[in-house]
Length: 474
Image 1 (spheres, helix red, strand yellow):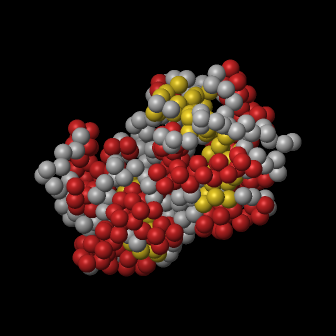
Image 2 (image 1 turned 30 degrees about the vertical axis):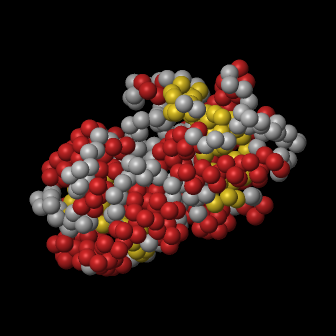
Image 3 (image 1 turned 120 degrees about the vertical axis):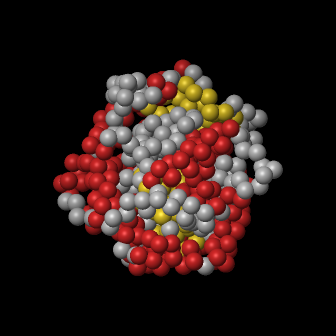
């Protein structure tokens, strides 16, 4: 079936983006609350705002699922939320009111698609482009693009075949993976999205060549490599805070006090350099490997404290099985290596305001940021740390290869090799000249290669090319 596209005149593009799982709101994002509320949520919110400022874009609607559940904030029950003058967060009902993990959403996606269609057709009108983020929203966006005969754009964020391979390597059986993650349905949705998409947006060339290569539909897909941007106004260099003439806003001042208090609460010598890791509690993030590398190296323990922000949690017993195993593993390792007073694993923080402050605090103490993940599709935290002037040590698997090659803010390691982790961290901590070089490279390199403005310019150019071609469904 042909997809006829009405060419826009002076009005500009109307873009509909879909990101249906997790907890999505415009401010005070609950990043790390669970496995479904992570970097993708932040990415789509910031992308919607950035796109809405582009002169060729008239309107952006970011569509997610409406949740009216006493277990979460009532923010997620509001049908609409203004993200910017030209961007709106739209919440549509599907599958009842309760919050549920993404693996449980599959039976309700057709309902979500139908309700989203009703919203657009009765309200702002059929959009010019439909963009689905992750396999579930890719499924929804694909149905609507076909219904409206509009171009369909897909971003995978993470991929089911890659996750399946990693989990098998970690010892899980096929049956366990299927029961917990409904992986076959996810992979089929990804294959279908690749076949149908007019454009597939990837963050790195590595993602295309080493991630999507596992998919049968990938050879015929049309990819655009467009790295995400970050807000350099929020992730500014640490030395700004050391300038007495610089006056941060009140929220930043409060966050600085809060984070200093949090570190002091856990650490015997809180003014020592800090080895910092930030991720949700997931096996593939390999925080346990980092703790073991730190615990086994007396010199490293002498040089610096270790601080791990592994999401936001309440009672560990209330976490899902994967997160519970990760957290208990970290606590057992703390005890095994007797890291009391040297290792901090805080329970809560406000990601929007606390994390930028945390990077700068660690940089001011001449610390290091570490991403020890077994695999990393992109690595947005590496950009945030680098933009703040904090040198990085990162897994060499996936997107970090391109980030470090462009930005030059640190070193790549095999995350399965504890001695490599230890050597890289110590090398940066003890070599002041190396620390300064990586810090300066990070601040300059992120601003050159990874701004939202650069991302949006390339994104809109790719969309306009697709619309000019008005390609039929593959």
